[in-house]
Image (cartoon, rainbow, N blue to C red):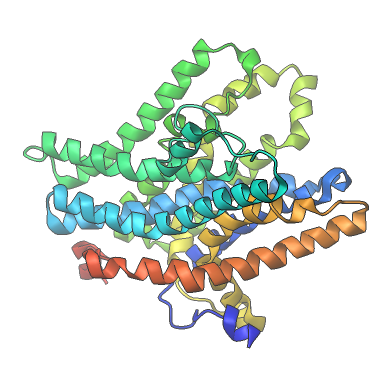
Length: 410
């Protein structure tokens, strides 16, 4: 009975297995990083952790690839960009992300208020003005996020990217559609966001003393509006150059280059190696790099993985044994629920309250944390996220899955 409760129908879902692997890897890296909180002072670090890519950045690129592809195909199918296309795009994005987010956000606020009522002490929530910003994804718009529900910094960046990307595309379409083909307008939109955001970070990095560190740029909306655009750039290549995208030799070459660059970026920015920058007098250069060139470097390196992973349509061989493929698809499906539930609702609110009196207790807390994350995320997905997401089919137009040029070439 319990198995049926947490089981998802993964066999009939139309999935791209390679993208499921990327999504599952991204969320597992994120949750693994948060799991170490349970060990407290007993966590001594693991070398392999320093080789792991940034799971959040991987999410950004993957989201950009999928959402950018949808926007490009919708634009090409309609052959114009208008208010109807824009509202349909936003409706479908927000039905996917907002209900789950607001459910968890309101749940956390309610829990904090009830806990304060029971204890007779003042709640530990931010002030009302700050709380309101969370409902409009302004909690980290121009500064680093407060301590409350801090993991939502990346969701705010994504949501604002979903707003700015189509608006910029609409603006360029309005200005240049009479003279430029749609392909050029799409590329100009992507490059405008990438170059504009990088230029803003670069100028700000020059103006602020290096002694102030990395400035928290990673988690601020206005300094990361390019975060998903590297994935959108990959979607551009897929949709307008399908023959090259499907070239197996190119896919393998880009995969190897992308993996090498991604692992290099992860290792050279890890805590393990930071001390060596200081030893060799390179810490200031490293800090400037983390303010500026690190973001396009990690974004583009991960975008190079997309052709191969997008071409990996189904699981075969060893992947189909012992339920590995099914597990990967399951984790991919519940990844958004895992993202919302793992840190503040489960780790901070519950698991971290258990005293870590020994290494054994710490690992026991880690195990409990993983069980709670997987079970509760599955339930949230199955009984809330999925049904609510399906409602959008009733109130919005279905988006195209292929360009006309792709259907011709198949």
